[in-house]
Amino acid sequence: MDSERLSLVLRDTYAKPGTSTWRGNGKASAALAHELGTGERTGNDRFHAVDVADLLGRYHKLLRHDRTLTERDRRVTVTESTELWSALQAPDEAGAITRWLLGNPARVRTVLDVADRVRRDPDLAPATGSRFETSPYGRRTLIAAAPLRGLLRDLGAARKGRGAAPPATAGLDPTRITAAGLPTSSRPAVEPGDGRRGPAAAPTEPHRRRERPGPEPGS
Image (cartoon, rainbow, N blue to C red; front, side, top):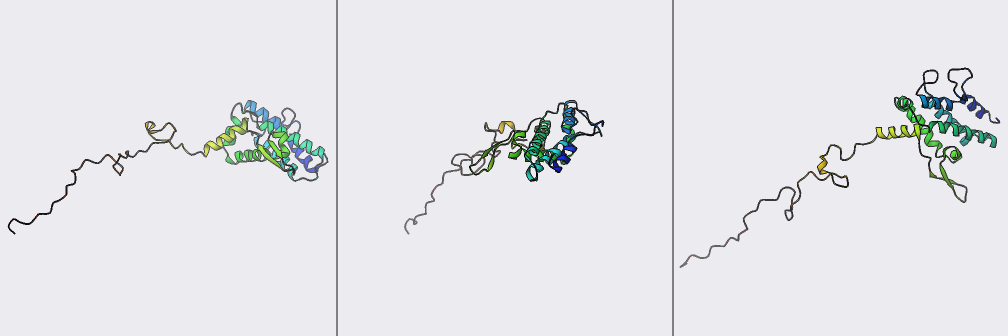
């Protein structure tokens, strides 16, 4: 590699040969794929989801800020990012990793924040599948961010569900819910011509005009 920074990230992408964390090609993404499929931890009694997200974030920073990257370096960076993104998008077959991540909100935030950043970056569109539009002046605008799938989708749904407000109709009598799903008023209806809320007013005697007494006869 021409970039020393890229070489350092690549070194951290692989496990040390012969260690208990070595799976498949030895990359962190391979370890995570094994964990997602089996629910078993890979070495050091931990999962690799946060490690994979951290590596993806580091590759993303290289593309964004390292001006020394050659075209070859950039291709390698995108290739490695594609593998990491694909690993995070795989389904959590046993649900073990999702439960482990949800046990610590900081882990969930780390993984989802990285996912959100990379899928909004046009430089990583080949890795994520997000779509961008290029203006005549060369400005690239996000048209459609790549959807979250697998592990990332489960984490995103869990985070939204945790902060969701109860529905507006919760705890209301179902017979007082309109077809549109809105609660009807619990107050008594307004009777026509009544001018106030509540039951219709009881009928009253018609108003009679008082007659003024006339002069006494003979006065």
